[in-house]
Image (cartoon, rainbow, N blue to C red; front, side, top):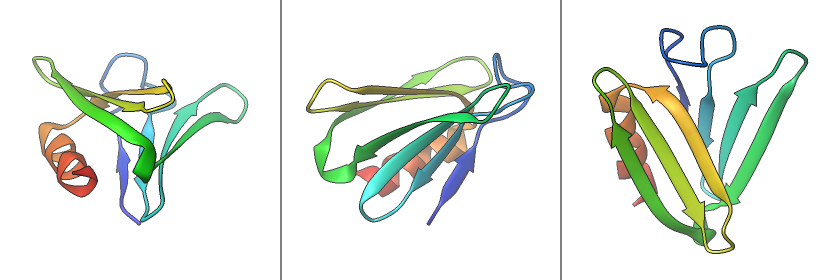
Length: 89
């Protein structure tokens, strides 16, 4: 199960970086919080679109489901973004 962790140098990821886990059935986003973390899970069969927003240093990954749920993860490297795209398409 591949896991991708955002850079701690990116905005809003200094203490609790975003993390994306991809398994054969689900895509899971973990967003850290002061106590615990928030989890968003989208079934891979329900992924409607995958968008990549490239900034100067880091990449944002936006995943949308057919039901309208949106997953936004900030601060990944371009290499991680390409690998995530390859795994999900």
